[in-house]
Length: 265
Image 1 (spheres, rainbow, N blue to C red):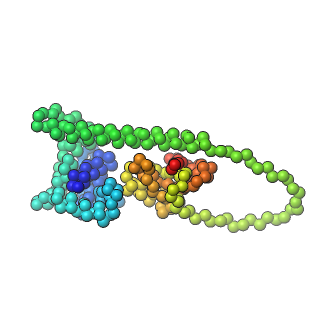
Image 2 (image 1 turned 90 degrees about the vertical axis):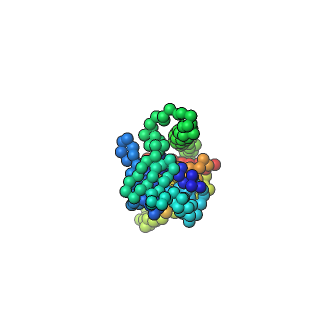
Image 3 (image 1 turned 180 degrees about the vertical axis):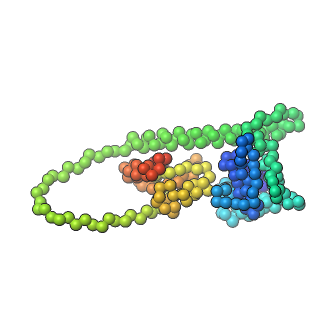
């Protein structure tokens, strides 16, 4: 399990540029060429490694914290430094970056492999393949979302307006009722059409999006649901009626341009 935690820390730095290690501090990618700095302070903007462990293994927060503590105990040396495989060594005042992370951040060419370096050379190739797969997955997600929006827009049925025959009536003063205050409610799960405002590979980032309340409907009125592909989608409204879904999409699009209809099945 310690190897998995090391890889999670490595991937967080490469993909998101930071990671928070509870009871230790934060690692952040800065500058150009990129380097990694260490701080003993943790803020809400940093991604806790325990959240990624929980999402990665489908664990509770307590189970993820226990795994993290086991890893930390094994990674900490007698002199107080913490060694993270393929990432570097954390000391109380600075961070010594590992060459493997340095290459991954700055795209440096790998050194020519010798007989004794074959294992490291292969590992570098594997990491490169993983990064390429992630980029292809993100590109596929964008194309799929575009095609889905186009298809859903074509399926909208415009009904002819109902013609009401004119009846001669006496003129009366109409009483205008007080406008009804509509209180937003969280979207129901397992509805066919869902108004989505964001898709994320990590559930923690999906929660952060809902917390920011991009549509102004209240942070508790969003549903975080899994995509079949393993991604996480932030849903603001759900319904089984396509016309209603399109109407809500147009309404929310005025507040945020990146809104689309996600059809669950």
